[in-house]
Image 1 (cartoon, rainbow, N blue to C red):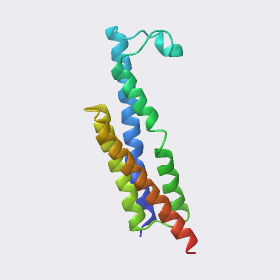
Image 2: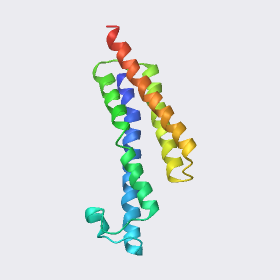
Image 3: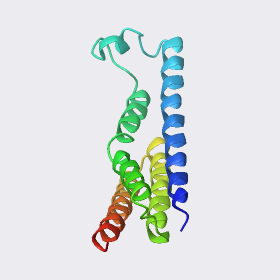
Image 4: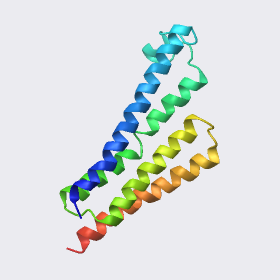
Length: 140
């Protein structure tokens, strides 16, 4: 297996994260200029309030820095230990696909049941990634 292949899902996840962060920045800029939120709010996050939509996007950005670091770290460890397999790569792509789907659901219809399913399946995918790493290291 080509070890570099594990980097591709991390690049997609990085691009996705950056797109969501830029989306949040643009939404904040527009809300300030429309007068929906005061710029003072963003100084300390306690002077006034932000719209529900801005809160949702900000919470989603925060979510992208909770479980995904485990994904990135697992991919890096697989790469540096020369332990990338097709199964590990499958788990990596599954995680990215599920996170993309999670974002679509969270930022559009926001159906909590569907979102929870995607989140839970993503946790299983990242766990599978780490299990692949553990099996590879323990079998040496």
